[in-house]
Length: 77
Image (tube, rainbow, N blue to C red; front, side):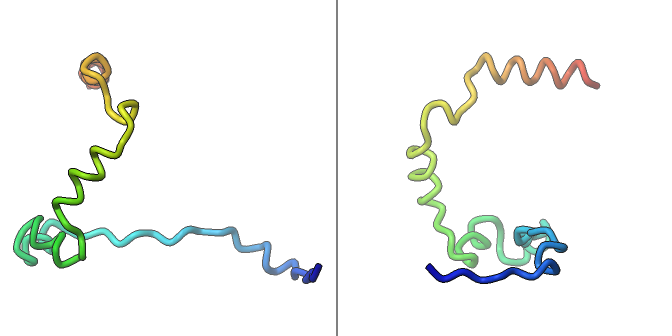
């Protein structure tokens, strides 16, 4: 088994995952709207439906969960 020695300097900088690029509303509208922007980015709107169908039932909020969350939000105002 090959081993390598790590330098202490390598541990001084913590790992930071890459920050995904975000786009402004103006950039999306300049591309021609949300669908045109998605197509330009290589995303297909029809794949969203497939991805949502692949999620487990536990991935969605129930009506009771939504009502409880909305009540909490109303109380926090």
